[in-house]
Length: 112
Length: 115
Image 1 (cartoon, rainbow over the protein chains, first blue to last red):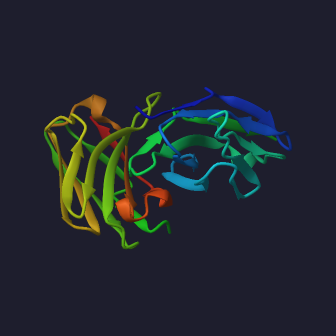
Image 2: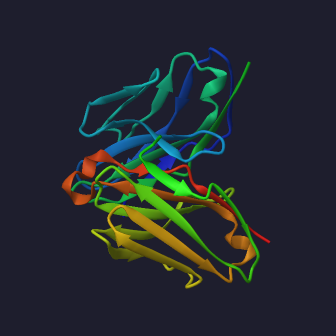
């Protein structure tokens, strides 16, 4: 079946550091890929997405590129802020499907 | 405003109480979902509704009873819960199979504490 694997946290960084969260997936065909973010006490918000190979999703300084050859969708941000402290979820929807499959989530803590 | 509204935001209930969680979406979506998020556990998909019809029930105990009267509203009726049911309950909606690449839109959740 479809699955998403992302690095376990917590990831602790200093402000202005570079952030990478690894995400790999298993799915047949060409799934759509998503990153969701959950701030403390809130629900999940869509951060960015990519729907075909080599597409780059970007939002709020975050980027992720759909890599079919490595089945990956790593999330990056060049300079994090304290306000980026949250839990980040990688997810996919398989081709011709509508079920959103989540990774386990990665907690990120940015210290001033 | 996310387009998906959940009420109440917080709920404390005794094990013998009956309560309901409400979810409302104004996005014109055709599918709605209930998720459970417990500490240190992955997100658990509980129920799926497409065009008001339940299409998925992931072995959820009968003390959780969903209701979807129309495509815009989703309820989760709770009765005789256990302390381990304490969690954040998230509602989501999506366009469904019409636009599968759209993704889901989530509400802010209801934080449930069973005492």
